[in-house]
Length: 226
Image (cartoon, rainbow, N blue to C red; front, side, top):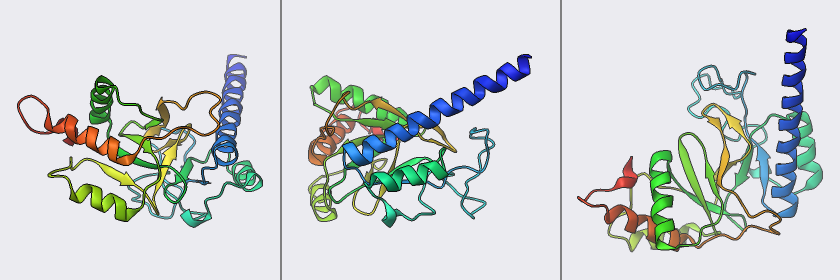
């Protein structure tokens, strides 16, 4: 009896998680006009980092489940019927945002550094938009920018923390509530409930603040490089 009840609870939990994922996908694509697509996903059902294997053909995939595969990145869409069809076929698939163009971009950094950086930015009173967290990296969503503008911004800096990654045109970003080989994806700073479309800061403001936070660390060095 306990085994039967346990299975029923697991099934209810899985259905609830799948419903929440589909609801999130529809919000991203239809309400916020963010182009999304399903990620490669995992072969296993355990969803643990130790046992997870990517569903793509590469047995040594470095980012299991957390990248485009089939469909490819260019298939990202905001079409309601398409995203519902994708997740009806693959209800556990991770959610990928195709960054750039008119869609949000992001600046990401290692998780430990991300927590410190957000505390430093909060201390300055800087307004931030949504922040996505995985067990390994945190990503600050920013307003769309092109590669030319990013290049000019970085060229003007004396130094930029080497741990920063930029998700712009032609890139992608995991969105909650995905589960991949590294674990659960969540909102560290969730969009405001009922937002027509989340507000996003300018990339220059975020990079300026991160550079300042790293260079002003007592004793020198960058706290954002690990």
